[in-house]
Length: 61
Image 1 (cartoon, one colour):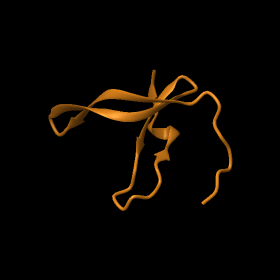
Image 2 (cartoon, rainbow, N blue to C red; image 1 turned 120 degrees about the horizontal axis):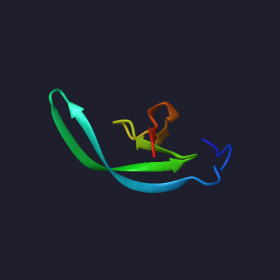
Image 3 (cartoon, rainbow, N blue to C red; image 1 turned 30 degrees about the vertical axis):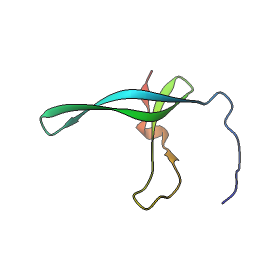
Image 4 (cartoon, rainbow, N blue to C red; image 1 turned 90 degrees about the horizontal axis):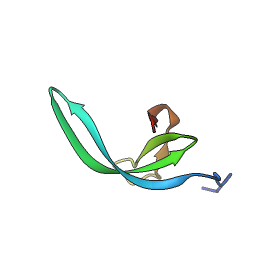
């Protein structure tokens, strides 16, 4: 694994995110990145692979 680029202006935050699970709302503090005006939740695979930052999962800030 190698670093290709450092993203300038990215900020790590913890956001209390609310999601619908079935017909119930649940919320939890979630590690996110604020980048280019969007909040992007971070996640890791169950086997410990690196954190993925998927812009298609972005939430408008």
